[in-house]
Image 1 (cartoon, helix red, strand yellow):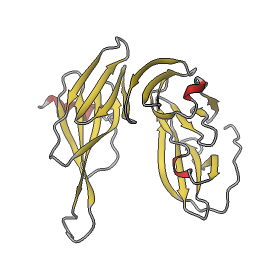
Image 2: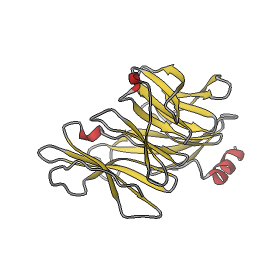
Image 3: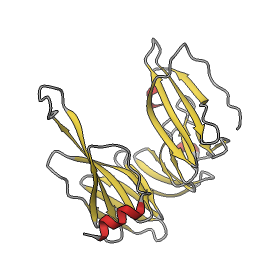
Image 4: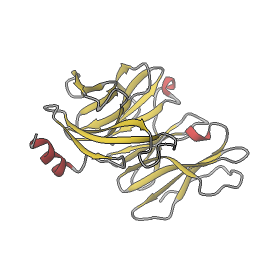
Length: 254
């Protein structure tokens, strides 16, 4: 594994994991804790080397949004907040700069499939290749939820999805029916022609109504070829559309 330089911070413990990404047998996560300065650092571990290695660290007021890692297709991309530099992490652990145009320095990575990377900056969603060349762009008034599903780029817009075919350039919409008026949705994952999304709702704790509101979740799956959907689970938790065989059987029964 390549060696990495780390900026020294004041004393900190393991902190709270704020963001994480996984690709190619490697995990990268952001851990932060509140000290007098607030510290935040980026760590990585792989199936071949489980002991975490630090990639970078900061002591600063913007620590909680320093790295924003995203992963997919064996590639992890993150941003260094202090410099705005975008970096790619290969499965080996080697880091390579993503040489985007100067206007995209500091852009926020939002998704990657290993060969293409979606970035958000200046109210625009950009699609760049591994060399940092811009291959497409679309206006976006706010940072969208984005997943790759095969050769499609899917973004979440209330109350549905926008599906962009990256081969033909065509776009289409998918309407989603919320479980109720107070539910919002976010994208969770995509694979092939499947996209998983999560409905979220604030609700009182059923076991103790006096408690503060808690978030309820409903995980659903939609097949992009025919827009069939199915509820996968309720109550929240991690979701991956790569469990394709079981989920396709759910859809085929509808």
